[in-house]
Image 1 (cartoon, rainbow, N blue to C red):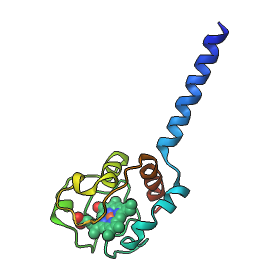
Image 2: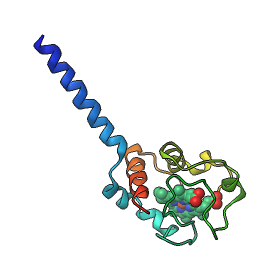
Image 3: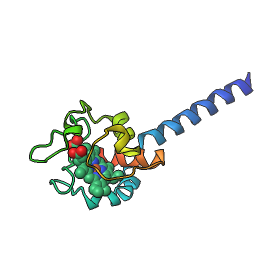
Image 4: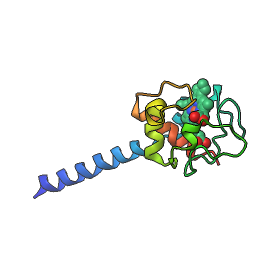
Length: 121
Ligand code: HEC
C-alpha cells in the first residue's frame, strides 16, 4: 500500500512541476524579451507594432501600425499556442511576415516571453 501512495504523490508533484514550467516565468521572460526591444517598445508602435495587450488580440490589428498583408490576413488570434509557434519561427508560422527574427528554439524561453507579454496591459 505505502509504495503506491508514495508513487502517486511523486507523480502528482512531477506533473505540478511540469505545469509550472509551462506557465512561464515573467521575470525571466522580461530578460528574454531584450532582443525584441530593438523593434518593440512598450506602449507604442516602432519598427514593430505595440505589444501592450497583444495576448488575446487578433493578429495584425493594432491601430496605426502598417502590418504586412500576410500577418493582417493570417486569421490568427494571439493565444499561448499561436504565440509559441510564432516565436519559435515567425516565417514558418506566417510566411511573408515582415518580422525579421529568427526565432527562439528554447521552449522554456518562449514560455517565459509569453508570460512576460501577458503582463503588458
Ligand atoms: C527586427 C525587428 C523585430 C524583432 C527583433 C522582433 N520583432 Fe516582433 N514584429 C516585428 C514586425 C516588423 C512585426 C509586424 C510583422 C508583420 O506585419 O508581418 C512584428 C510583429 C510581432 C507580433 C504580432 C503583433 C500583432 O499585433 O499582431 C508579436 C506578438 C511580436 N512581433 C513579438 C515579438 C517578440 C516577443 C520578439 C522577441 C522575441 C519580437 N517580436 C522580435 C519586428 C520585430
